[in-house]
Amino acid sequence: MITIGLDLGGTNVTAIAHDGAKVLASTKHRTPTTGGRSDVLDLLARAVDETMDAAGLKRKHVAAVGVGSPGIVTDGTVGNASNVPGFQSRFALDEEVAARTGLPVRVANDVTAAAVGEHRLGSGRGEDDLLAVFVGTGVGGGLILGGRPFEGGTGGAGEFGHLVVRQGGAVCPCGRRGCVEAYAGRRAMVLAAERAVAGGRASILFEVMREKGKPRPTSGVFRDTLQRGDALLTELLEDAVATLAAGIATAVNLLDLGRVVVGGGLADKLGAPFVARIEAAAQRSLFLQPPRARIVPAALGDHGGAIGAALVARDD
Ligand SMILES: [Zn+2]
Image (spheres, rainbow, N blue to C red):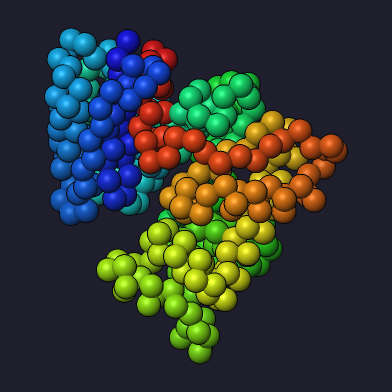
């Protein structure tokens, strides 16, 4: 059975054709930042067509389409996705994509889809109680419990980035205080670096950004700045490691998880040593001893969300 998986991000739409074991072809498009909902939906349909073409597939070969979408997903509808035009108010994303592609459509939260990918084909294989944490611009989380994605009563479960790890702490991009993302999300770390530099601290972060010709400090800029020994960013990263470890230990203590998979743009760029530091820091806060939970790097990289969406589409 072949399915198409779409990963709708704030920046890119990644689409893949998948046979249940491997990626047959993939395409990538820029997510529209202007216009409305129909521009995004038209792009999703075009991405399906182009991915079928790239894999040499006709519509009759494709069983279904899976969409991983940001926001709160319930029963094929999505809402509260502030990064995608027209996706704030709730609507039936499954019906809209089905009407445009003529294929059955299944929708999941994007991070939950990525967690499904890691569970079935990545570093989560063989473990049915796991948390997948994605550290990038923000910090996302997806839960697999008893071998199945767990999205909660209204689709809002797994918001790992908004676990409160410091009472009255730094302001998070969500507007609340002390969340994991307020310390470990790249956007929050850049804001903290800007404030420190404005206050007179030295840092080469923004110099490295300009050298690399980037409009903002990307995960690659973070990696290069850390490799050059920047003291400010090193401190911010230590704080990120500590808060990720506190959040992960909290989740493991609550749910008796067997594994935590850590991926996302920043974690992928910093690699296994970053994840090993998180694991070492988390061990001290784990209640069950000796701990059974392992904290490991994600395996599927950039395509993880689209692979997960393709796998979710097979489930119907
Ligand atoms: Zn928050």
